[in-house]
Length: 72
Image (cartoon, rainbow, N blue to C red; front, top):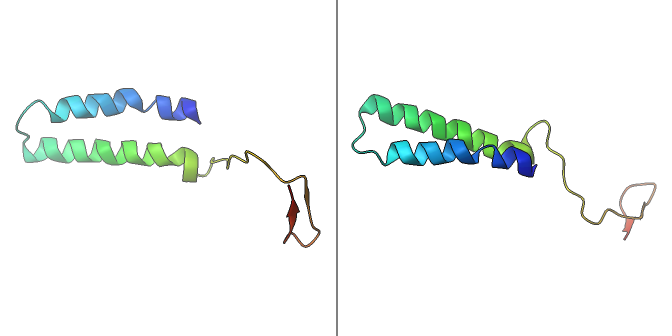
């Protein structure tokens, strides 16, 4: 998961740099917004995407047959 998040950093840095270059035309503004949306999608993907893996730091030792109780 950390690797996925680290790969976003250069793209975010480039977005911030481009946004700070000066006045933006409507087209440039649209392009930056689109890139920001793509970065946001990629940022949450490790947590909510189809390949997300919940991190069970302390998984239960045993779960009851009905799945309603767990022994930690």
